[in-house]
Length: 151
Image (cartoon, rainbow, N blue to C red; front, side, top):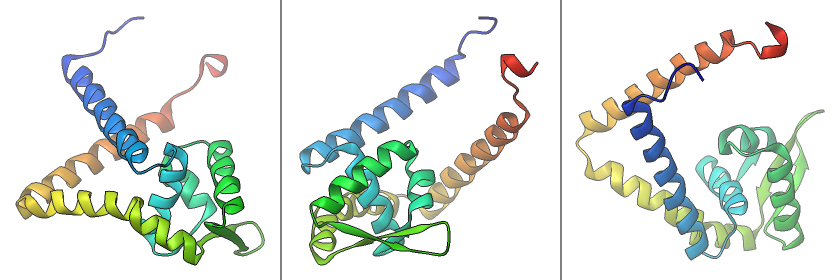
């Protein structure tokens, strides 16, 4: 390996890991596996339904993991799928799902909102601006990357 991780990246990776651990702990405390929490969270963030492809994209989980979680939640009467065009599905919450989502993902969203509301508006804007800037720069670098087999 040519370059070691910088002190900044070590701190960044530590913080990302700790954030992930907190979200995992919240899911456990609320009685849900991480994948189910991610599905419910993404739907709640959008309203009462969300395109399946968006759940896969925004949750950061694999399509297989999301599909497994959705099948389990569907079997429990938490959600159902409906056709949304020729190549996509909409994931919709049932009444039971709305109640569960409110008691789980809704509480996580509320906690996050309370944190941002407690910060000065300029700090929130700067945090989001810097995060978006990092994301865009990383996307550009990822676009230019080639695997070993392609070089």
